[in-house]
Image 1 (cartoon, helix red, strand yellow):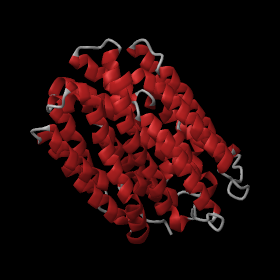
Image 2 (tube, rainbow, N blue to C red; image 1 turned 180 degrees about the vertical axis):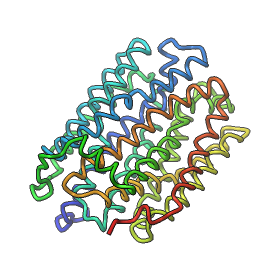
Image 3 (cartoon, rainbow, N blue to C red; image 1 turned 30 degrees about the horizontal axis):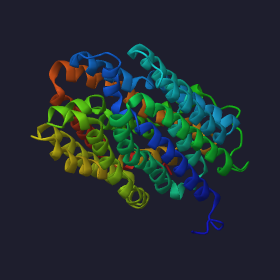
Image 4 (tube, rainbow, N blue to C red; image 1 turned 120 degrees about the vertical axis):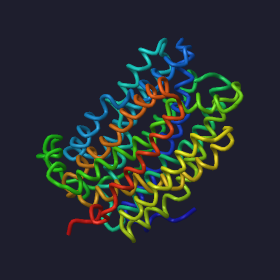
Length: 402
């Protein structure tokens, strides 16, 4: 084993939080890609209605998390960021466990909304790492942390697909809750937040943080780009299994194939996360964002024109490589432009932009796919990536102020 005793504290915490978040993402991705199929299990058999409900269910956590995550972030600045991580993962475990008991789509939607109100694990770990990592390493650290968000689905979607086909989605939710509890225990025992890393900011509040972001042009631009990128990334997820089925995937292996598809993107994102993080620290954010946006947009649009589901996999791999550069790079730019004393709260607002994309995009996808077709729902996120490319042409918008 590698000796970690000589590592600085921020690196030790980064490793532990990566592992904890990886476990949590395995757990969540074990069932989330297959929620559209769970919707059908709960009695919504009409394809048009299933697509609309899938969009609502996918967006469910984000109705409330848009407000709750920045609020939890401001509390982290006041009372400690490690505490917010533990609170978030326990909340996630509770919500996911209850989903396995849902008897209809209305209950499932309510529990997804509850998850958004009491969870926010990814945002909490992001706030912790952003606040405790030296600025010159923030791009690398955030990219590594975000790679666990991609790494988890590589394993979780594959395992979840097999389990879903074998024992049903409902049983998988119980395993998810147990894995989340394990993740919370790891954080409680091994993550250390020194007093020097957290000086309570008694003036921290959601309203003050919103005013600060509104007064800073660079932060306003970054919030908008984060929203657009995340919208494009998650846009197609509510109808993905239906599209794979439409392209000839066997029905009795639909969950497994969907899981492999999701996992491929995650695998390539993990592989290239460190490269993109170091590249953005070295060369600046604008060039990285423009390159990644144009390639991801092109690969996404091409998926709408494949004749068979097999062709989706290489395009998914390409998109995974370049998607890995986008959100971590934007987060790192946002972090570097944020003052240390209220960085957790401000990063909560950046996470709120991500959550807003997670809220709006799946709902739009469900309705667009049901009325205008699945292919249009694939072209639109590609167009969003092109808009990001156009909007990121002035590289100085992403660099440090001073």
